[in-house]
Picture (spheres, rainbow, N blue to C red):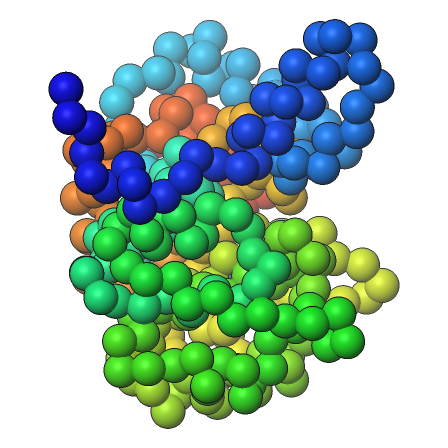
Length: 293
C-alpha cells in the first residue's frame, strides 16, 4: 500500500517519543527524571474521582452530542464569564478529547494550502506539525532569554503577511513558563487589531499554574475587538491534574466551532460521557449539580 503523502509533512510527537524512552529506561531499572509530558506533580482531586466513579455506576455511559453535552457547554460558558470575563453562548463552545484535539480540529477545519500560522519559539512541539498536517506553513518567530522568552509586539508585526491565518498564543508558555501580563498582552492585541485577516488561537491550558501573584489574562478579555476572531482554548489537564482523562474545550466564533464539530463528528465523536456529566460540578465550573439533567 502507498501511504498518504500527508505523512511526509509532519513527524511523530517528540513528547510521546521522549515519554516512551523514559518508560523503557525505567523498565531497565534506570533512575529517570522525565521532562517530556506536562504532568502536574499533584493528583486529581478526590471529589472529581468520586464523581466520575459515581457516574459510571449510575450507567451514564451513552453517546452524547459529538462536541459535548449542552449542560457542560453551559457550565463552560459560566467558567469563561466568571474567570475570564469573556461571554460565550453554548453554540460557541466545543468540547473535545483533550486540549490537543481542540487545537487539531480548529487547524484542520480552517487551514488551506498556503496559509501561514505564526508560532513563537520555544513552542509546544505539536503546534508546527498540526499546522503542517493541515496543509499550512508554520512561521516560527524566535524569542530570547534576554527578553525572558517573550515575543514582542514588533516581532509579531514583522511576522504577519497577507497569508497569515492564525497567531498561536500560549501563556503561560509550554515549555518556557513565560507569561504575559495585561499590558504585555495589550501590546499584541493592539497590533492584531490592525490586521483583520489574522485570527488568534489562545492556548490557555496553563492558566492556573502561575506564581508570585501573577494575574492571568486572555486576548479576547484584553481586547474585545478581537472577540470575533479569537478561539480561546483550555482544558482540565493541568489545573485539575487530569491529563489522562482527556477533556479539552474552546470558545469562539460560531462558524469555527461549527466547523470543528464537523471534523470531530467524523473522528472521535463525543468525549467520555461520564466525565462530561460530572465535570461541570466536580471541577467547580459553577453549574451546580447536574442531576437535574
